[in-house]
Image (cartoon, rainbow, N blue to C red; front, side, top):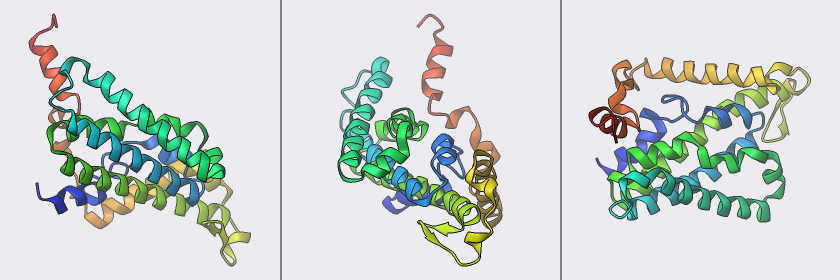
Amino acid sequence: MKKLEILSNGLVKENPVLVLLLGLCPALAVTSQTENAVGMGIAATAVLLGSNVVISLLRNIIPDKVRIPCYIVFIAGFVTLVGMVIEAFAFSLHQSLGIFLPLITVNCIIFARAEMFAKKNKPLDAAIDAIGMGAGFTLALLMISTIREVLGSGAWFGVGLPWIKDNGIVVFTLAPGGFIALALSIAFVNKVSKGRLKKRSDFGCSHCPAAESCSKITKDPGS
């Protein structure tokens, strides 16, 4: 794959939130404000970049049977590091993200890229893939949070908007508003792309991150 294609996959064609529907917990939980959404996106991108590169570097060393525990150790290490940096330099953001910051450790986007891409490609390609997927994740969170903050609070990045700030739709600041904003964002992407970004047939077992391990278990039930 060309470098530009790898980078653009996460932004558009395989956007983790709006196309693949991964990482929906933070997409719903931290998007009531745009600042929190961007902070979560950057934090997840940093973890994804670090873990992708390390896993790619060690892909020929990590035994296949213990690769998942190894991935968890690497990812948890980077999550701890990123959490400490955010706590030191952006304490208010650290408090706003709360439990969802350490939960990046089990973010399915990071595990999917480790299993589907990092363990099969060179470190540079893995880094580009991480940047593309992280940027796509951040943009998706920004889109959802913009809908929620503008319509719910009448503000954008904390700056009040004329007229809208006095006529906010309260539901968008609550949990149901997250689902509505997510649905609107997905519908917008599907409308613009005319449904061509991800074909229905692409969602078969062959595209699942666990497809390889599942096939081994099927062939050898006693393993």
